[in-house]
Image 1 (cartoon, rainbow, N blue to C red):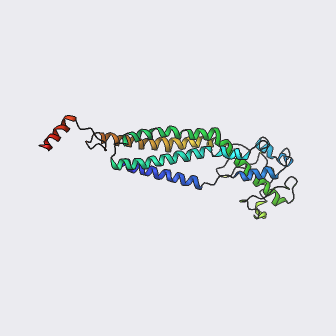
Image 2: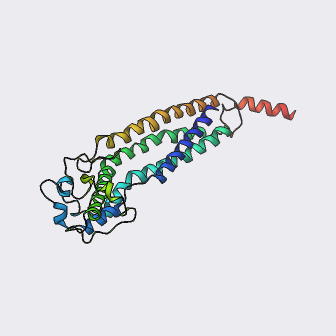
Image 3: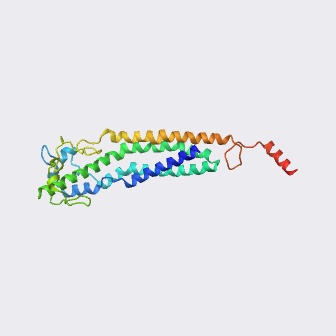
Length: 268
């Protein structure tokens, strides 16, 4: 019963993760594309203090293919989504097999034991591929917001003539309050504190925690909790092996002599 309940609860946990993933709003590359298409190189360069180029370390628009950035940013998320769906299906199957006391549970726990190795590839992909792309995508969105606010707050600004307002950016904001925060208007000063909430500072790059958190998450959810559940499933399988039962269920096989004797007795 404990294995069934544990498998069911872990399946519910996977469903929650899937819902969180599908509802999580990520930065849109449309902002980065609009920023690069609507600003000139001179505007992005700015001056010795306020400069998008100095903030980023180079011209973010030079040789940046935003569709490739989006693809790389989604690699770890898509991989994680696929592994979570697979774990969910395996947990549902485990609940069914445990309920039936089916012999296949002896093979199912071995399949489940392989999953942490597959899941561990997710944090590695995040650090190597997705995290840098996600930072570029988020920085592009932040730069667009600065440029768009510059156009609204300061009117006609050289280098912003072609900048368009992307869907999702509210150009009708309260200028009296928003335009007072000059560090978020126009080319930024690298020395300003530009970090918002849990997000990284666009001028200071990725935080170490962005690379560490996926591994911490892995060890808590996919190694500690999952391994404990797997141990219970294995223990349940071992208990079933000791219980005599029919051919479709787990249990010690009946000795051939005993089976023949029982058959002869029944025939007599």
